Length: 134
Image (cartoon, rainbow, N blue to C red; front, side, top):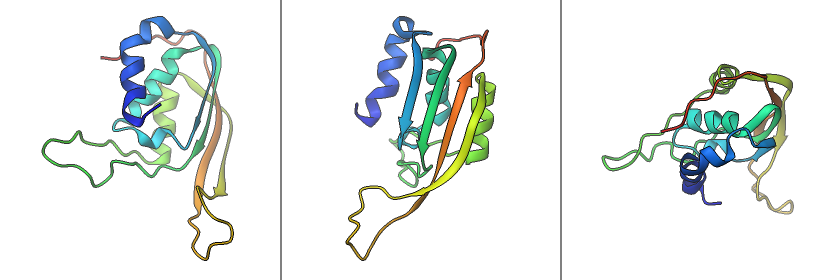
């Protein structure tokens, strides 16, 4: 799915997908948001109670430094703040670590970018109240 359409799709169709999924896996994805809080909120809303969110990736924020008068601002939280937001939306950490990795790298190239990516498994607690994303 395109970067811009994931949030819009679930904002429109959330009533269909509310508490419908056992698991959500995000890989090099959550930093594609203009508003990462909305992504976390949607993940919480579409997961069943007891559902699992597995995430792997850095926080590079694709829209960083791209703000102009017509552009939407980007909310760029630190990893610690992202974890606080996830706890607020009813998640509990089961596993958390940082993994050094690459992304679209040619192993024979003299230039290679390395990331220290966040990896976690979180479980949604039971009885988390949902509010519709505007």
